Length: 139
Ligand code: AMP
Ligand code: ZN
Image (cartoon, rainbow, N blue to C red; front, side, top):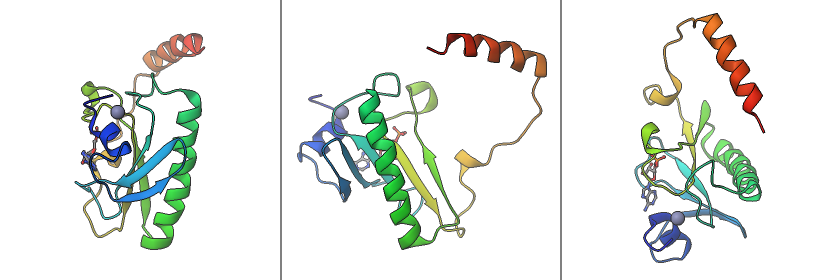
């Protein structure tokens, strides 16, 4: 994609702090890090989101994400790593090229907002009915 900022990074038209690369995947540092070590893992071939990405690229991103998570653990000894992946502007996806966030937390920072929501018991009838509809739609 001509104008896509992550495609420009893949083509080398915009610099990045490269962390990992193979034939399908590129991983680089997020330049607005939520925490130290915040890393993005992307497919080299443009796909906007989880619905568009082909299974082979999806698998490659996940496997690379695991290898990089191991490296983050070695280098930073974090108390945890959040893996976050947004699909659609309605959930605040800003860059419309599929990317997996790896967000290690040292424990010194405030809790990550993405991993600290309030638990409220749901309506079991509604959960059950919706689960049946979703289960029936799984291809
Ligand atoms: P999202 O809300 O999941 O679409 O997040 C997009 C992420 O891309 C943000 O965390 C940005 O800081 C990051 N980002 C945007 N442009 C660049 C860039 N040129 N290099 C590295 N990270 C970037
Ligand atoms: Zn792109």
